[in-house]
Length: 180
Image (cartoon, rainbow, N blue to C red; front, side, top):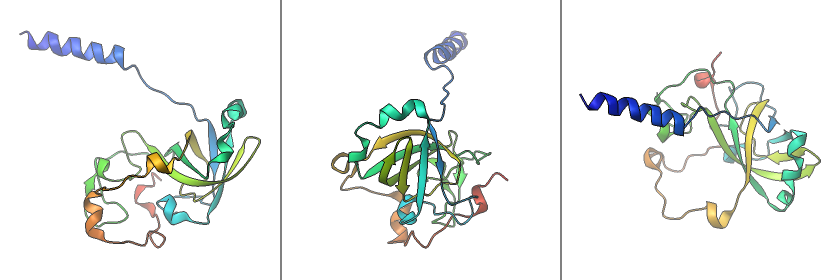
């Protein structure tokens, strides 16, 4: 009998400590990709492909000193993904894996991440290279890439280790994660 009140109290506690989370985009990413199919599926496979971030004007002051960095980490919303699933067949395999063991977009929180090269900043426009997202992608955040802190050694990469040295420039997206 004491279990049920504890569950109710814990549920109330979680709702008050973790209210609904919402984010507003800080800008839009323009790319040459009008749909998901045939798009590079990782930014390292998008070498030479250029895009532009149009940052909302109220955030321009936040770009101060960013031009000294060669690479940026972009966090964005997978706005064309409609469904969520916990098992997916990723682009680099033919068998299912848990969503958290992949970078597939059909996630409980459809947030993407890419490391891109910053070419230049002009006012509220950031010219970038290595884009692997669809045109019109809502941008949530920009972070500078610090190789001294962001690169790790002695890493394991799970099921991908058995795939060997894949040429990610040859692997393209397809329609498997398109909501249309």
